[in-house]
Amino acid sequence: MSDRLLYNFRMAMNDLVALIDAEIAKLQEVRKLLATVSVVNAVPAKRGRPAKEKVEPVKPKGKKRNMTPEGRARIAEAVKRRWAAQKKTAK
Image 1 (cartoon, rainbow, N blue to C red):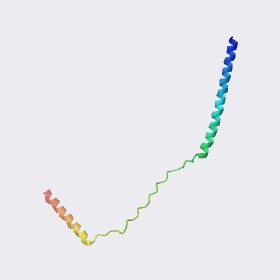
Image 2: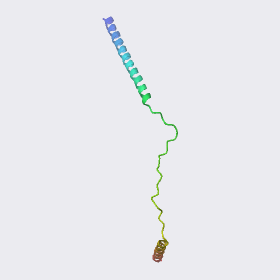
Image 3: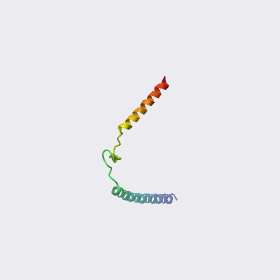
Image 4: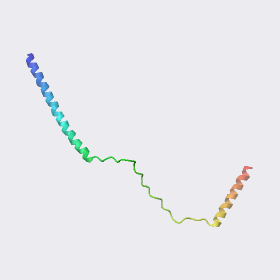
């Protein structure tokens, strides 16, 4: 009886080893396929410093606006009045 049990155990072990070998063969085949696909589709890494973002230069909006002498005089008078009012309230 023990010989029969030992024979069945060996058969079961041989079956397990065969199943494991078959699974390893499948996994190796899949690994080869994945390795070839990843090499074909891989994008090489760029070396060096990353490029600056391209910034478009600011375009002038139009003709430069110049102030007339009368306008400057009006602004100067308004500033003088404001300073006088501030001095008056400070005292």
